[in-house]
Amino acid sequence: MPLRSLVRILPRLAAPVVLSLLALPLGPGGAWAQVSHGIAMQGEPKLGPGFDHFPYANPDAPKGGRMVYGVFGDFDNLNPVSVRGALTTARGIFADSEFGNLVFEPLMQRSADEPFTFYGLIAKTIETDPDRTFVEFQLDPSARFSDGRPIRPEDVLATVDLLRTQGSVRPQYSNWLSKVASVEKRGEHGVRFTFNEKADRELPLLLAGLPVLPEGEFDAKTIADTTLKPLVGSGPYLIDRVEPGQRITYRRNPNYWAKDLPTKRGMDNYDEITVEYYRDQNAQFEAFKKGLSYLYIYQQPNPRHWLTAYDFPAAKDGRIVKEVFKTGRPANLNAFFFNTRRAPFEDAKVREALALLFDFEWVNENLFYGSYTRLSSFFDNSELSSVGHPADETERRLLAPYLADVTPGALEGTDKPPVSDGSGSDRALMREAIDLLRADGYRIEDGRMVGPNGRPLRFEILVQYSDQQKIALAYARTLARVGIQADVRQVDDAQYQKRKQSFDYDVIVSAFSGTLSPGAEQVNRWGSPARDRPGSFNYAGVASPAVDAMIRAMVTAHSREDFVSAVRAYDRLLISGHYVVPLYYIGDQWLARWRFIQHPSVTPLTGFYLPSFWRDPKSE
Image (cartoon, rainbow, N blue to C red; front, side, top):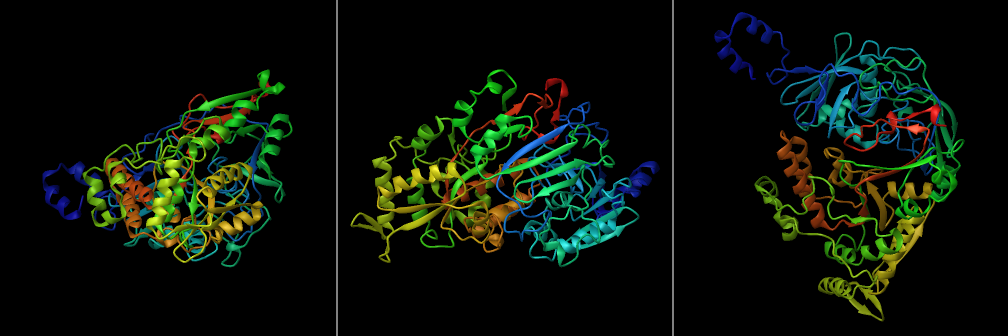
């Protein structure tokens, strides 16, 4: 409530009410600020201030034993924020969507059972005003780094100072902090961020996810450096052993300060966690089959494996359990990404024609036993998808200045990838693609598709592993039937990461995780500021004022209804742009585990949550 409005009603209120109102803190705009145990993007947190534990955690889960995870790839770095490494940061250090934050922790803990909500961790409370012009965190006085040092406001200030100016740290941090006008210590345990005109309603939640680094651990030079030296964090585990590119082992910190917090009860149940790195998915699966000293869970990415590979003794006699988990999270976007920074992919008509020539029906039947569903939206399998929903009044108002960027079918919710006859050479679709290219100045000469410049239409598809290669080769065969040459090139992980980060590719196969609360991170995926920023996720090189405007609408929406409308409008623009060839998804999650690895009976909104699993010695 603005201060001038309160002055008018104060004389009519009873004295105790007046005194309680006057005790409330004011935000910079004169509106009453609210101190809370949590914060949600829209509405209120689902869990009240007295909650005991997350509903998807078992507070009585036994502690102990060893967990072994397996991942595909490589690593050469333990720095949680640097992007300078030729490979990547070791999994589990920080902001790991699967394994959790083992070493470094954020100010607050995100709930896996709500679209976008944070609860207390390093910061015990959060305070902001109705317009979200600032956010203040009060740190928990008991919060400690692993070496016993208290976590102080000075550590937060030092972290902010390093992340906001360095070009070789993860770009989302500098982007978030560019919207902050000032940061100051408030009292003994408080840190207040006051925002500038670029801020939006999402910013308090993004800052709640900021890592906290101990002051003095990094300086302006070393913050961007790769390192293999174990670092001091605040999380439940310590870095124990490091074998670059092969494995990293974490050991439980017996003095972990937060183990009894509501956000941590029933979590982090192993004494030791090892993350094993594999260069080949077959090798990873063979390790899983061996079990006890190798690999304990296998997240099934391949329907062929799920349906045919579990005929070995441990799977037959019940020592390995196959489970299907329901999830409310949108499907991951799995796609061929066209690099619009390069010819001919700057031409939307060419992209549209090329997308018609991927025969999903053939690939699904011949490579994946018909198990997949074709992606038709950037937010499939959720209410955020625009497909099947004509644009509502709010969407049409948002899109009114950009109608030239939206196809009629996308506006009506009817634009979907074509359905082929499954032959790998659907003549009707090939004819449609050829007609689009001819209308754009292309022609067929001596069996080759030639552009207006007289050059053959030829490009490279960059892939990382064998399953991607199989899909790309199937796509290339169909393209060849209309005179287009696509060269499929598989490279090792180091080269793949280097080329991806520098946008050195024509077409790439990659994926984005689905989210129930798309917001500022979308700038790094599709926004103009990320188009030419090395290391960004804007693989397609999108630079569209319309797309940027819809991202702004998403992060400034006050109600869930307005938010859904903004996301659907955004989805319509991305569909209309033909920036990708959408591939496929499975609506459920498939997980195989050795029987001695167990989990709570409740599955959160976003699917199974590995930090809440435990090892049961009685089942071994």
